[in-house]
Image 1 (cartoon, one colour):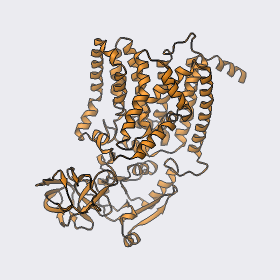
Image 2 (cartoon, helix red, strand yellow):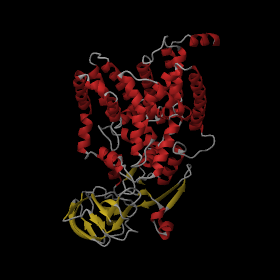
Image 3 (cartoon, one colour):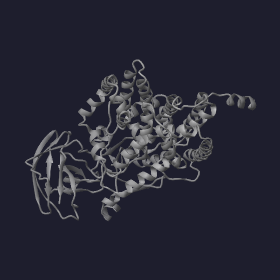
Image 4 (tube, one colour):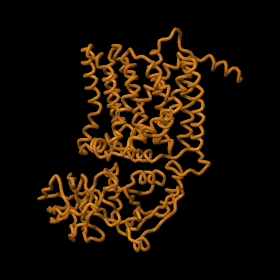
Length: 584
């Protein structure tokens, strides 16, 4: 029996060998997907899927749709991840179809050539991780493969290739905004070829029209939500220059793209030629993505998966080089087996955690159940940690809301109104003890030690009344572009209360504050002294003044400032328009 199976395997074609090993890889991922716990972002996308829409705070809708579909087939973690595990073998086989004819050889491709492709792909740590978990990089890679296939057909003047490419580009845009780079770098790699083919430029424009038609609903959603995603990605994520961001980026890139192969990436880049539009594109992708996000690291932290599309170029380069160099092929296969052995070990740990690692993918069920036990049926208000709220929802099904704070950032939670259903109920509020006096800690804060090693600190609010939807219109406020210590600001505030209850701003339970935020964690609330009541479904006008304090309280830098009504236990986001100024 075993001998017959061995003979059948040895008789496989290159295509069949690729399919065999991708299927084996998928089965392993499927088991791990159902037996291991969610990472933070996966739970966050589960929250997306609860309300399907054409857009979300920080991502287009494709990820939410895939999670939603999976959860209608399977429960638990497998439901969240199912379609993401399917996408990887599909896009890797599509990519095999694209590149298998790009290598000029004197023979047809063999089973060993298919094994080599599968081995190189599976030894890429970044593919091992992002073929398993439910994040936007899965659909990004899938629709990039579809785009590359249609782009190849487009360059070969296949009929209606421009239409298929337009559809691919539209779906790519609905997967992840980094998809724009996939097109831009493909065009940059083929500028000369396009300039010699005016007809192709026209067909490319038609593809753009098709793509635009597909993404129009998403753009409409963005317009209705003040282009929140673009503002977040292009501005709010930026930070100050830190050398650690660059060094971390370089180290992460060396690790996730297989450190055993780094010298071979360089060698294959030098030796492998690119004579067609698709090969020129693939050869440019690694350098283009690495340089682009390397420059981005000068403005803030860069996550290594943002460069994941470079994988296509690296796999093609190394496979193309190794296929005709026997010594390199042997090295790649040996190091591939070593890498895959280590990966299997990591996946075993993900499922069983035999050494008791405490990380975001472990102890979730027990830890969040312990939090729910403390809540005892009461809703939970989470302090800024949007993924904590998402995991609490996923693992307990209990009522939760995550309040945005200037100390962190806003998230998809700002578009949800879960807290409206908590009005006048007793709730518990997740708090940071460092924000309280010693006496307040003793008298008000309760603590629970969780299985994940963390401590859950909370206070009880007997009658919760949110103020999140209060709006503050700022009038007669001439904010200069620069301020100095001692400058005085004054403004008239029109404060509107949409809730069916009065809000007492007494400086104790609720405080009117001026908020200064720029580059987390440099964020500060300064209470203003006015005490007043905002009647239910009504508004009041308040005049306020603020003196710029010394730089120990307000460091000299640029700020986004505004006004907020803040509950004593809940950090606040702005209730007013956000203004930009600089303290010098």
